[in-house]
Image (cartoon, rainbow, N blue to C red; front, side):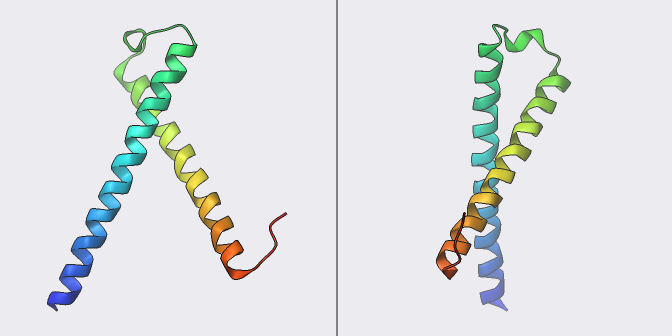
Length: 81
């Protein structure tokens, strides 16, 4: 039972670390997007900022899933066109 708790604990830490990195990248990209628009974060409501970051997070997760699928396909020897 201790082994399962140890594995679950490490898995949870890994998931938390990955989610944290994705969140940081989404915030960074949102800041860049706002700057490219010639605006400041104070021009948006907190809810709008949160929605923009959430959209970026979804986009990043989608990209990671796609890249992971390509890596798995390549590892299995499937041709990727």
